[in-house]
Length: 276
Image (cartoon, rainbow, N blue to C red; front, side, top):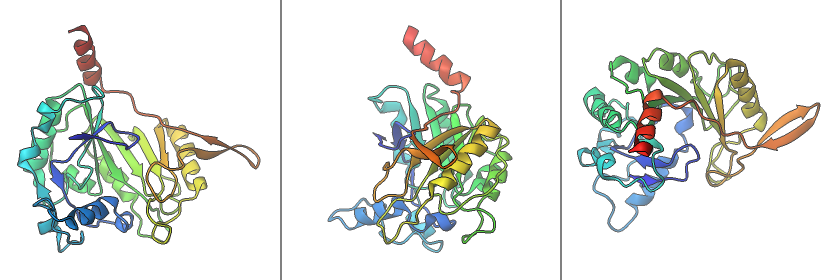
């Protein structure tokens, strides 16, 4: 485990690493790029193969790390109780992980109710079909970067799959937002994170602020918390203010970083820590 600069998390925990491309958002995957850099070192970690994250390579690039399962038990949490991004370097619900290991990870999360454990998947159908027991302090999200009728395959169906899962808090990561999404059904969704793609100018696909502002308006109508993470840029967390139209042709730069309400079990655990 370690601290992170990701705007919506305090820590990351990676009991699973590696993935395979599952949609148009994956083309310039930053986690894959980081692993390739690790593979180029003189002494790369044993699980890092350096292979591309293609579907055929999934059995060799996706790794489940039993030795990392109990890191939350011994980590010191320098910033105190917070939000933990679970599997930032892969997908906990990948077919190569399977329901047994995924449930073991979720069980560890339940043993630390003072933290919010945030997982993100491009495979919500697996999270649904595996019949997992999701603790109250786990926020489950799915990635959606493209909409119907656009230049890329539509990924908004993942929201419907996410809605079918029995989990306390559901969220959607509209990142990288690579085209206008259009109108989406946000019923049953508690949080939306919106951001542009990062990478070199030649590789990254530009996000228009108007696309992100449209999602802001939809979130306001649906009473969904909205978090604008970043604009398209060379590096993450650049251009964190969203251009919002406040009058005809008049725009104002605003930082909008909201969160859903904390689960009751988290509030209780933190209150007990304070009074202990």
